[in-house]
Amino acid sequence: MNNLEFIKSIQISDFSSTPKYLQLADAVMDGVKNSQLKQGDILPSINELSVHLDISRDTVEKGYKHLKSLDVISSTPGKGYFVAKSDVVSKQKIALFLNKLSAHKKIVYDAFARELGHHASLDLFVYNSDISHLRSLLLNLTKHYDRYVVFPHFKEGRDQAPEVLALIPLEKLMLLGKMVEGVDGSFDAVYENYEKDIYEALETALEPLSRYRTLKLVFPDNSDYPKAIIKGFYKFCQQYAFDHLLVGNLSKETLRKGDCYINLAEDDLVLILEKCIDKEFVVGDDIGVISYNETPLKKFILNGITTISTDFELMGKYAAQIIKTNEKAQVEVPFYVNIRPSI
Image (tube, rainbow, N blue to C red; front, side, top):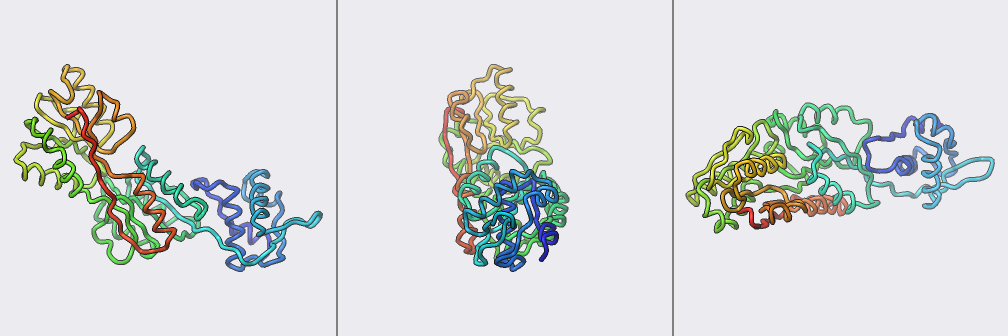
């Protein structure tokens, strides 16, 4: 393979969490591993790569220095860089598709990337809970990946999910956060059991909840939250004889003393607290508040907001461990409750 052909085969992604110099180094190692490059082959010059890949000379030089440190390439004054050995192991290439950016997705992402370490290069894509956008991303990827990790949360078109996810080879697919009905067979998953989780969480908080007249689940209209949360909420309220209501638009809600609100969205938590202040209601006395998803600040807000939450860090860690060990697995992530003075 000549230099120009090799340069054209290199893909440098702006979406990747992997620094560009490491993406370049990985491309060279892939070329050696796939026999595109052989021991003794002269590599493109720093100037050639800088111009053709539209990256800085410093980036190319840093990539080549990294490869030299691994003894993959060497250099001779006046002749440039060349492949020094043919037995190299390239990193796994992973594409991670988030439905949206949030504090909790960042926790998953950070734990996932940290646990993978240097075992893989990771490219990040965000599809805004739009299944058409996810389809477009999958159809227009510029390179092949060893694993495709997807958070399958969609505002609309959930029935199309199996068809869209079928664009990914099943053996390379990993679902994060939830399972998808209609996607069957041998694939990896690290998921939440939404119906069981909210039921058992509310059961844990049964004693303080018994002080409230009505339980209200704030489930925003046209959201991408799993409907299984509603099923678990209804099941709990029916089992323990609570009056209950689903609230689709909190901005139109009139707060009443004796109600306890379970909110999914962070914006709705802020709105509930604002409404309490306006009415001079005392949170944990006049009004109960439970918030989905633990964050460091919630333990300090108003002496502590009760949270029910999956272990997002463990989700990312489990996902990375499955990829590193290359073992097929479907793992349910633990869910936990932090009871604080807000109920």
